[in-house]
Figure 1: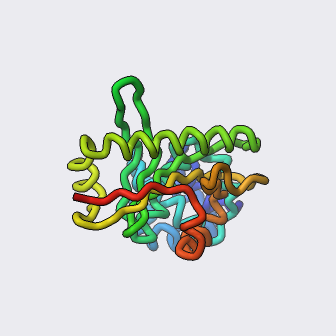
Figure 2: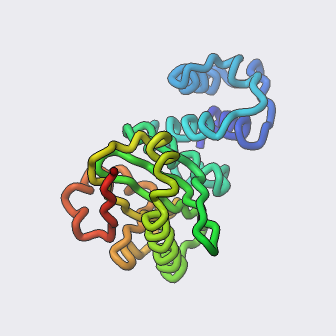
Figure 3: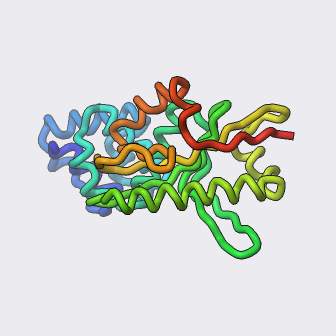
Length: 225
């Protein structure tokens, strides 16, 4: 990874202040190019102290879309940073997105990392940032995400007002709820209990092809009253 990207990532995640005057000309020019595409000036960016989760996600996604190594960026990310990237990606693809959605039934509290809606799909996403994702861990995650999906469906009348407002869900239409596991690293398992388990670098392809194989996946149909 080149010095310009290291400087940007260190600044937003580790708060290592960068003296712009000390950057090499080539690194300064590359930083300027990257940051201009995100509507920051070089000085404005490196004078900022705090960045919102949304801003971090947009910056990371921009770096990834410029062919920055996924493997390199992961070293800077924690689980929250990964969720920020996923949120930013679905937003970039035109989905309505809601992060860290919490709800509960009579006995248990639940949380879904990311809800992403673009008609007719409502993806209930569990983001997995494991360094070494085993098949058993991923299968267990799929079972739990399926359970969260079923619970959300059962208590949807209680949650409907909030979700309709925040995700712009359509009335009088059928919405399909799909649980989805997204991992940062590649792994050997692609499905468990008909629930997709998708590495980040395959996510865009999966979303482009979802219409072709959606009926073979686990989902729950929800008719919006």
